[in-house]
Length: 466
Image (tube, rainbow, N blue to C red):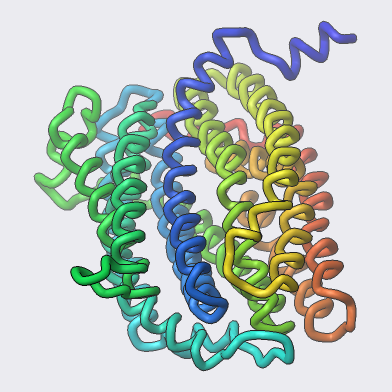
């Protein structure tokens, strides 16, 4: 029995060496990105509750943009990964062009939306509370922060088109280096600009945090841009990428048909996360602050299963593109199991860290205690979330974007959001219990994901004959 289990779910030493060589730089790069947000939150949290809440709300809005960009490049990335696995670098070049067009369009829309409707969007998250906080101040700080952060949308979006394409080739180290440089830049500038240097640089508070983040985005973008264009042998798709604008009609059609549902899925999923956060926010600014503290540490720990999911998309996608169907199934099963086991250990660490982490913030004790509760609940659900995430990327790797749309966004908007809305706005249940019930919906999603993956409906080579 053990032999059968081991053969089915556990790989050999070479398998894990390959996965770790691919995953560790990605995990490190994403952890660094999360750490930049982590630093902003801690340092802004040192100033006060209103500043922290204003920044948290804006970051929730920008999160929707970031995930939409991720969805846009990932839709084309399904094809880029399989084209690379097939050895068709011209096809990968066309996928790269699609990413550039998509990111430019989405960024233009987002900039206009945030510029002219930013105040109204921030106001959606602000509700009067009898406990703590001043919503007018929170709105003011949120507007200041958003006004500067808009500039950083441009390098982030275009940078993701490059980073996604670099990862398709298996070169995950360079994005990690770019992320390290961005983190160090953000760290130094945060200290200088948020708190100031007496006699030299005035303390800029939330504006300083925004400026530091924007500059770090440009640093990251510049590094991946220069490396890509000076290493053609490692990025053959970049040769002639800007010598023309065309994308063959059949490839454009296929990427659009397969990729658009994925982009819409990411937009709706991120929008759903924002809506759920807004549901919690109606309970008061103290809940906004507590959720910001908990999500800061949760996002930092979640990078493990998030990036292992991205690895599944790369490894399985390359095998599907090469026509290795049975090997793709075997690798997907073992990688999902590996992700879940890793997250059991990560969750235990997170519970320990979560007990002390809120003490870093200069805010009320009631907010800190609520944040600790949120962190524990998130940690307990993490292994289940890792399984769901692995299922999502497995289904996506074979181009089954309609199925992933149903699995992800339809599930959230049809079940999770109505539940969160009802419990938050129409019951007297404590917010901690509401949070537990809503997070617990991941268990149902995991059951659905299990049967979807086991069916093998995702085992497709979508670049055969192209």
